[in-house]
Figure 1 (cartoon, rainbow, N blue to C red):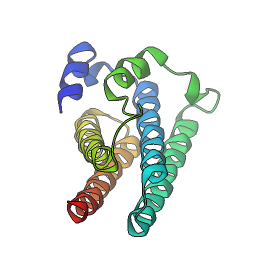
Figure 2 (figure 1 turned 45 degrees about the vertical axis):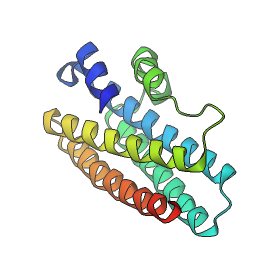
Figure 3 (figure 1 turned 90 degrees about the vertical axis):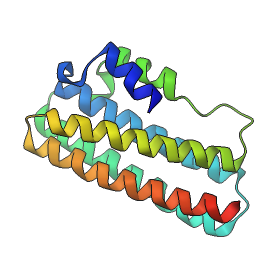
Length: 159
């Protein structure tokens, strides 16, 4: 959880605006999609491909849920335009798409990403006042833990 602690020191979750929370969550879900697509590009195992395809679809679903909640709260605003500084702060420490990683290393990074996202979503869910957002984040915690378990199984099958 290295990057979460470091970033929360910079900007405590108590200080986050709802727009920032949703914008950050959206960014995390898109990054997860890209990671799983990257693993799929380097993968030769069919069983892993089906797991990755499932994860990509679930991350896309999460993205659509986040966009929907954002639009409910902020119908006149564009989620993509929110707090790029916050996104950059987090993305500098979570960027994992550089070349040269093996499939196993990418799976390990996916496991770490899912764990970190789950922990962060849980922390924010406990502090946010809006019930719909808290429920969404709690759902995402559950799903990120499921994703982590799937990736751990795939990694253990490869070792």
